[in-house]
Each structure stands twice: as C-alpha cells, then as structure tokens.
Amino acid sequence: MTQTNSGSDTASSYAALRARAIESLLIDKGYLTEDAVDVVVNAYENDIGPLNGARVVARGWVDPSFRERLLDNATEAANELGIGGFVGEHVRAVENTETVHNIVVCTLCSCYPWALLGLPPAWYKSPEYRSRVVREPRAVLREFGLDIDETVEIRVWDSSSDLRYIVIPQRPPGTDGMTEDELAGLITRESMIGTGLPTNPQPAAAR
Amino acid sequence: MRLGVSSAILAADVTVRSQDLGGAHGFGPVTIETDEPVFHQAWEGVVVAGTLGTMIAGLYNLDQFREAIDDLDPLAYMSVTYFAKWLHSLEHNCVRAGVFTPEEIDERLEQIAHGDTFAAPSADPEIAANLQQLISAGMPSSRHVDQAPRFRPGHSVRGRVLEGARHARIPRYAQGKPGVIHRVHEAFAFPDTNRVGEGENPEHVYSVRFDGTDLWPGGEGGAVYLDLWESYLEPGGAE
Image (tube, rainbow over all chains, first blue to last red; front, side, top):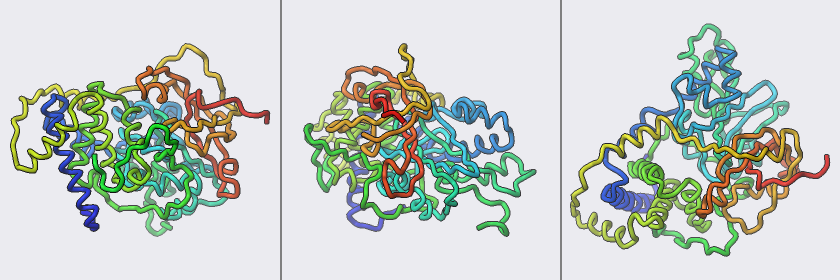
C-alpha cells in the first residue's frame, strides 16, 4: 500500500494535496458533499466487487437456461440477480470452452465491467498489460501462471466502445453437488477477466 | 497540473497517440500485486467521486474525460499514476466548464498549506442520493439509429486508416487491417463528434474479429475482437 520510491511518495503526496483542493472547491461549488464522497468510496471499497460477477457465473454454471440468457444479454441476466448499475449497462459475457479461451483488455484506457467486478486491478490498467496481451496473450498468461494448450484458440476482447466484457470460465471438475455460494467462492476475479482459472476445489488434483 | 516529469499537453497538430498502446513493443512483464486495495491512497477515491459528481451534473461527458487524459504527452502519460491522470482530467474539464479557475485552485492550495479552514456550504443531501442512484441504476448509453447497420455478421471489413486522428477510438493495430464482422451491437454516441461538442451522432457499433496473423505476422496468432463504430470501417476486399 505504501510506495517505496521517495519520488513516488512526493508525487503521491502532491496529488493528495491537489485532490483535496479540488474536492473542497467542488464542495464549495455544490457538485460534491462529504457524504457524496463517502457514498462513492464505500460503494467500490465494500459493496461492489468480483463477488457480483462470481454469483452471475455460478448461476450460469448450475442453470443452463440462465446461462443462455447470460450469453445473449449479460446485463439483463445479471439484473435478474439484482446485480448491475453503473458501468454494467452494456455487458457481454464470453464463454470459455474446451477449444476457446477468452481474455479481456482495454488497450486504449481501462474500460472494465465495474458493476460486476468492481474497480479494475492496477495490472489491468498498466501499459504492460494493455500493450502486450493483444499481441502475445500466451506469453502474458504465462506470467499469470496460466499455460493454455496450443489446441485452444485465444480470443482477446478489446473493450474499445461502450460495451464491457466478462469471461465465463469453465466449471472445474469435482464440483458436483456444491451450492451456488460455494461455486461462487471458486470463481476468482482473474478467471472472469481471463488471466486465471477458477480455484480447483480438490487440492490433490490442483496443478 | 504540474505532473513533475513533463507537463506539456500535446500541441493540437501533433499526431502522437499516447493512449494507443495495443501491440506496442518495449514493455516488460506485467506487475501483479496480490490482494491489492481498491484505492492505494484515499485521495484516489475522492477523485473518482469528483469525476462522477461532475459528470452526472452534465459538465462534460466521458469522451471529454478521456480526451484530457489522452492529450497528455507520452512521457507524462507513462510516468504519472493512473488516478493522477484522472485528477488531471477532472481539473482540466472543470476549468473548461467554468466550475473554477486555475487561480482558485492555487488559492485553495495555499489555504490548505496554511492550515486555513473554510466553511463549506450546508450539505445538500441530494448530491449523495443522486450518486447512489447513479451507482445502483446506471446510465445506459445505447441510442436509437434510424438507418440499418451497414455491415452484417460475416461481412469482410477493413479498419480505416485515420492518420492524425489523435482521439479516434480505433487502435492503430487495426487501422488498414482486414477483419470480419462478428456481431452487430447496439448504437452508441460517436466519440469523435461527442468529444468536441458536435453532438452524439450515434452509430452502430460492431464486434470485429481480427486474426492475429494479420495484425502481427509471425506472432502467436490467436484472434482479437475489437468494438468499432461504423465510421471506423470500410468494406473489405473480396475473400
């Protein structure tokens, strides 16, 4: 959480001071209040995160007709579970199969399905990820510890317009009989971006 | 905002696209932080709140928000942290919209440095309520377009080459490259006009599949699916 580079500390404290000035001016001018700031910070620190997406994916794993609706219109399908809202108005779900592995990026900025996954991790917004994952996805996935078989096609979805993408990872083996909540617990943020797989519930069978 | 490295905003006639990173060479391994916090510093959350609060008030739109960030010269763009770029854009767009002046910012910075307190106006509960509503209900951006889509799934297309278009939402890796329409999405406001106050002019947006072998010969292969407004596409050659 703290940056070790003193140059970064200086830049960060300068930004903090500047942000405080802007915040107080916006409050003066009637565009913000302290409560309004709390609403936004609390929403993305506490309420909205990858568990939303995990619940949607888990429902798709157990309910084939929901899965169809999810693939057809992910926004409306998520809304069935009470999930959606800001930066979740136009979501497309893309499914991993035995022959296709999907990865999501925004090469031009950092577009990401906030309502389903919360705010994006720093690596997603980094020039390293944005530049390389479209051109050499397998090499990037190896850095995430993921080695995709050569027979599997990699599809990289560049979120360059208003649409946001979520990956439906494959359900791991040995999960029959798990409840939806338990299944959601296996579905990691990385698996819904495409840079990881769901947690394997059987440690003995884990790679 | 002085960003410490190079604060130059790109001159209007410069065609560098700082943000157009897709396929760029020279970047190293992805730095993956485990269990990272949503906000590394508290001020980042304040910047997000400020951005939402000013956009919901209609002071500027998302395309203008992006424009300010993309106008940073490449050195600044690469070296400044992500939310520092948001802060730059928030300042820039608020000044442009007449919310406050650069002098008022400097004055407030001095006041803070001197430990002054300034009486805030009585808090209007509607602002927090409006932001909660925005987060919960969202703000759909799809638009109706009378004309039928020009392209259909399976059509061969080519990304147009837009030399000098600094802000066009078509990455250079797709400009001049052949692709196939995968899906016709909804229509959305066209950024190139929406950004400069020339109206939304919504267009159909398409998911276009590009083969990695066409984009980066000799590379890994694979496929890239890119969402493109109709104006960014032209019919492709006969297959």
